[in-house]
Structures are given as structure tokens and as C-alpha cells.
Image (cartoon, rainbow, N blue to C red; front, side):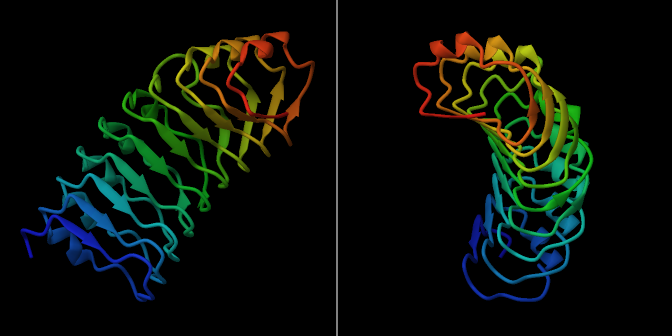
Length: 226
């Protein structure tokens, strides 16, 4: 099966662990095994799947850490590990995934901060890591990268500090969801520059002050929850 390019085992009742031998299928471009009942960890051998563009392991009972070997998958565009029991930090090696467009790691137990290496992911359009147990300041919102980002979700984490004024530079963002964190300070007036913004959720934080009048410039907003 070394010529296999796509393997889909979605929505079954598979149990046991994910075989590490899948790492031998070096021609794979798509591997999707979402919604099963597998346990154990994500095989580090997946790092050998150098042609892989899509990896979907949503809705299992996977535990352990995200392998640092994910950083070897330089053709990856979509990575999704939601609804598992993953722990530990997000590997800094994921900052090597220059072609990545979507990262979804919702509903796990990840800790630590978001690695600064992820700020260089210029192709990234969707990043959702909520809810988890992430700490530290809001990452990568000071103009270093993420210029293509349209969706940013960090709901129900433990992020703290102020919202950087440079968030106004991310003019492609259409949805920002930051509710239930420990953010503080005031809402930057620069959010009024985000012309593509449609959804902004900031409730259940420690934000003070008033809603800036510049929010009146947000012509596309349909949901504003602060």
C-alpha cells in the first residue's frame, strides 16, 4: 500500500491505538480518521509522511502530547486534533509548517503558551485552540504575521494581559472569539480598522473602560459580545 495517497476511516467505532505502521504509507497526502474510539497517543511515525497535506484526528480519546515530528510535514495545509485528551505544550516545531492554512486543536487539555514560532505562518487562515488551558499573553497580534488569518479562536483558556493595539493590522480577520479568559485593560480603538470583522466575542474577561466609538466603522459586524 505504499502507493496509497488517501486514507479515510471516519465515523466508525474503531478502538485500540492508531497503528504506528501508518507512518510507512509514505505516499499519503490525506489521512482522516475522525470520530472513532481510539486511545493512546498520536504516533510520532506520522513525521515520516512528508507528502501529507491533511491530517484529521478529531473526536477520539487520544492522550499524550502532540509529537514534535509534526514539524517535518512541510506540505501540511490542514491539521485537526479536536475533541481529544491531548496534554502538554504546542510544539514550537509547528512553526516550520509554511504551507499550513488551518490548525484546529479545540477541546483538549493543552498548557503553556502559544509558541512564537507560529507567528511566521503566513498562509494560516484559521487557528482555533479553544477550550484548553493555555496561559500567557495573546500571541502574534503585533504585526509579525498572520496577515491571511480570517478566524481566531482562543475561547475558554487562561490567557491574560491586554489586547495589543496592533490587532488592527490584521485586516483579514472576520471572526475573533476570546471569551472566558483573563484578559484585562481596555478595548483598543484600532479594532475599528478591521474592515472584514463580522464576529467579535470578548465576554467573561476583565476588560474595562468603554466601547470605542471607532467600532461604529465596523460595517460588517453582525455579532458583538463584550
